[in-house]
Image (cartoon, rainbow, N blue to C red):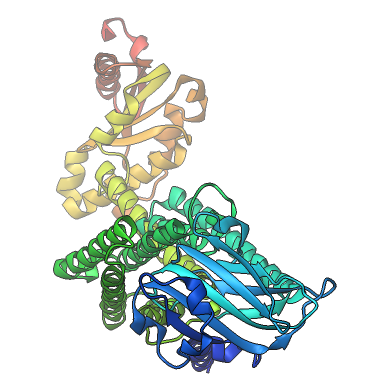
Length: 559
């Protein structure tokens, strides 16, 4: 039920976006008629002959050039207390002049150019032209456009509104853009922090996608021109092409790396990269060469953007088919960007009408995608961290296995020496050897002999202090190494008693002999000397009757 409602909401959103002006239009919005200014003719001569205006043909069919558009609307009377403005969405135009005509035959002319656009452009990349106040009612407006690229139309969605309504619309857009900025910043901080901690590649790709989309939004919103930093409005539109292409490229890259490249063939990865690079080069070409062959370059650009959109489909489909984690939820999260990108591509080909909602649809797409993708990213990271924890546990288990004696669980000789050599404080080394172990094996067999070894290892492990090292050096020989300051916590007598009291197979009584010495183990030579002393003490303990301990300094020839 939840999925069905989400799909219905997305389809409703798509219908609203496609409906554009018809969905949001006011019945009093102006109707546009158009006529081309012939070469060698003046705009004034065309303006003086309004009967030549074409009110039915498609603007795009007329190609680029200079035009006069007439806005037909019911007469209105702006006043000083209730001023009005004409709102015109930004297009590629070199210069625009607006001729306001009044019922008494008077006329007022105002306008702007691509270079001076900052004084008229408002948030959302919409031009606003204040309507001069006259005694007579305003009956029509003629818009003279020079250097129109006419890619989507000469004049799109003009609206004559009160200053109060204009203020409310701008306030709404400012709120939306501010919310988008906060969302983008939060997503960047969140995902960058996770990337720094986990180094998962797709998190960095997501950040790059958000940055590209934020830069595109800054450009498409008109802020770059409004700030009046010397950027012409037409140059701002050049930036739009590049930023939108980068947004698509980073989005496809994010999809590839989110699911992991191992589920895709090398040829598919190379194909998506080739489409992305070609799209980017097309965007660079249109930004660098416009207005030369701008219509052809614009069509090539939208063809490549459509191919890039299509290239993302098999990435998602394969993830679903191969049952990649969270693939179905990913489809839901990316349904809105895919639908909106498809609509923008259709708009680029002139298949759907202009809509201010569609023009700012990236904000809607990111908001929907971010809510669901945050859940997906969190779930994906939980999976990655779980897999990493399992891998770390496996690695730790492997290290432990490599460092321990498989029979007794104590350190093996190599691991013991790695940890022992380098200890520069005074140490005590106790060598422990089982008495008459050969006879134990002969009497009980090797399997029971192994049980005796394990039992003695457990007894040794029980009595040694926490910071000490216990090792099976080989055969029936064991050792304990501990700081001299902890010697009273693991005395030879305690070890002897622990072995005597240990329950052995078939009630056998087993004893050990111990030889111990003290010194530092700063180097391998120190170790060899300490071991030689303890071994000599062990030999003396066995010679004295076994089941006892002997200290290296207890006899003169120990050195």
